[in-house]
Image 1 (cartoon, one colour):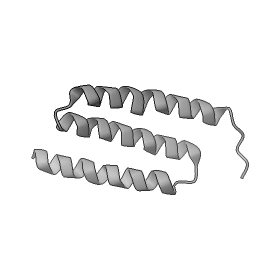
Image 2 (tube, rainbow, N blue to C red):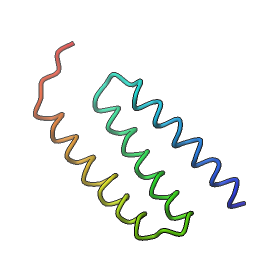
Image 3 (cartoon, rainbow, N blue to C red):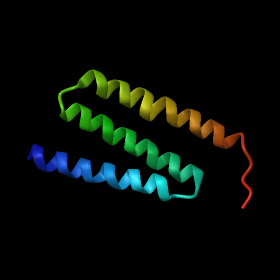
Length: 79
């Protein structure tokens, strides 16, 4: 069961990485990037590295997402 879960998370990580590169809307890209960070934290936890998983969840998902959203909110959108 654990192997199937790891494969599912790995496929989700690949899809998120491709989606972040292809999405043109900045806010949508940040949301997908945050989900990538959360999936990466889960993967680190599955690999028995809880310290790295906690760091990824706090920095990769939390702080980075907040900083990117704050940056987007301070810029103008011109289409």
